[in-house]
Length: 68
Image (cartoon, rainbow, N blue to C red):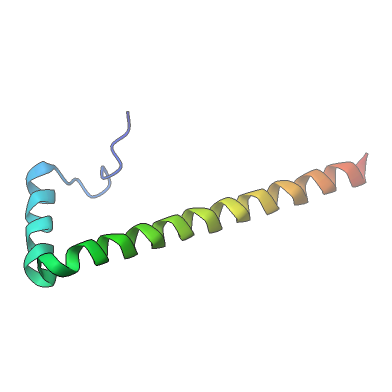
């Protein structure tokens, strides 16, 4: 299994420290709103990347059918 954070070389202690800093900066009340916003952003990013990938596949299939 490939570690998603391998390029950052982040382990558990580093992630805990980052989460504590985020908690201190934004506070406990803003944290759920912040995480919800981050989740929505990630979902939109994945959707956009998927849509772009689907469009590329359609273009490739039309090019192949045109050359046949």
